[in-house]
Image 1: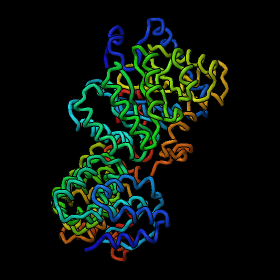
Image 2: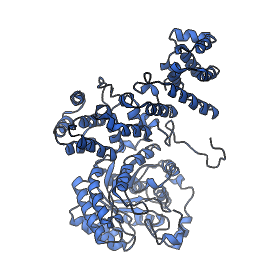
Image 3: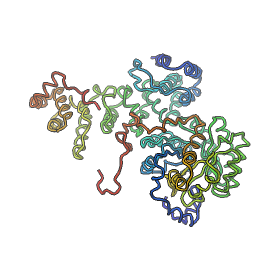
Image 4: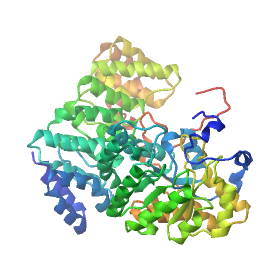
Length: 272
Length: 339
């Protein structure tokens, strides 16, 4: 798939003629020149937010700045036919990246050749304490969904929940739900409850398909909560679950059951 | 740093000082912030890598809205190129983010410091690394570079970095030596002029009464570091502003891993106010001049810190970092309960 021409089209609708001519002089040069252009982009390209554009390769460009888009475009222009020099060039950019460059690099992962090679870069972004870098791998980025192992995926989702970040912005959040993750969410909730804190209520959407005897206790606890959103979460889990005892539990909360059936309550209401 | 005062003179981080100055330093006004209400400050030389989150909180509370962190040595020499790379990278990465979490705009200058210039084989490798970093966003100059022992190796890399700065059209932040300062300062300036640098692009740092006149006369910017137990206390800084005015003069803290004071700039502003210096002159030497000098890099957008910083929504979600929900978390220092 030739992503660079698709990204180029996006840039043409957003950039000024001066910006476009600078991009054109850089985009067809050699590897070193593209590397330099990637770094220098901030001197020549505005940081305006790109206006709504259709997704490319499941990347939606929400709240992207123009310089970020241009940087990703430059990366897609790198010649990947010589694997070693291609990987070396991108590694150098990663190793010396300023924060906005790091965001662009992580955003570019779905467009790069040799995806298996970028796994450590991707999981290191999950480990990052720099908020925007973490967000670049976590949100609206299809790379984790496609390439992360289950433990790496679960770590990403748990870190989002742990830090009150919106898991609904993770690509593939529903498809990749799993029992291990559901159990971890349950354990995390127990720890929080011991500290008289709680987890973001929408996290419970990830346990619906994995309710068992243990998790049902958590759901019952949520039903007993004073928080309306925790009650809603409990009802939605039971409504979605095929676990018989969860169905029975929901029958004890007729008003919430009705709301779930009529879609008067849904997970979107609980998104943080 | 847990050195005795007697040992500091053997291992000064920026300056040496006398016992009388120690007494002066202990008599600093406690309620100085009364005098600086509503003022904004720009500290163009502070090594936050070596400071705690308490310092960041104190800085923003005192009105310091933007800072420059020059690349320097870390108290002991690095032994490999990767250490330099990771250090430079942290100045445009983690430290910049950490600062943003407190609402403080963080810039840096990148360079090979004078002490480590003496390890020539490593210095050559660092020189190859510098062009990768100096063009990065928020890098407002080449620095801090210059002389320490005034060796030939120091001179060699100082000259090479002046050329680099000239080519990149970036300001230069020049560290002047602790020992034989006057000679080192003169030498630094004459070499800069020899390389064809516009003195208006060069900030000569760590000045004192002995060096200031010549620096200003030649058209360079004169920066003053207010550092406890040093030859440049802030009372004397006040006298310098009285004598030389506010043109091309700026104040910094150079706070680092030594016994130093990150609030040196607002404290000096307060002292100037108490001693009758005009608000306009205070503003120039503690804020505007540093901005004018380093904005020549094209990397300072004052709207990033002129208005009270709105914490970016993308920064609000913060990982396991220092800030939650866009607020600086306050720790009640005297409370035994930690929750």
